[in-house]
Image (cartoon, rainbow, N blue to C red; front, side):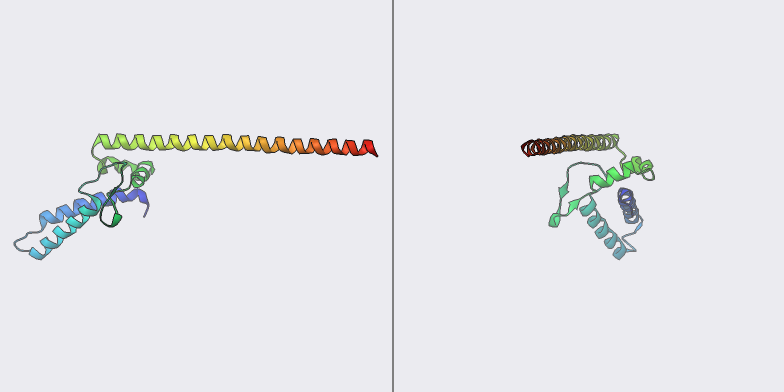
Length: 150
């Protein structure tokens, strides 16, 4: 399964559990109703009550991450097959705008770092080539001195 599908899968599972909770009649299906309540409580403790985007990672019991990771939302937004469902998973416009801004700033930061690394590599290559030229020049001077002395 592609990580871009995780937010959509979590969203659908949450909806289906809530539908099952409403459909199960506690009077006639008490065991099923109790089981669905426990499943929904466990689901909410792991994934939170609803899908929403936040760049802040929250930890729960045993240091497990609560909710959906930002990278899953980023993958969903950038995947051409799943990005059409982003409005369904994140119904609030504020969350979608924040998601777009975070992805944009991450791309800009990555480009900045790549540019700095490229500039650093160019500088190091220039220094290496200038050092190589300096060595060749010194060797040439030594050879000229040896020729003159012999």
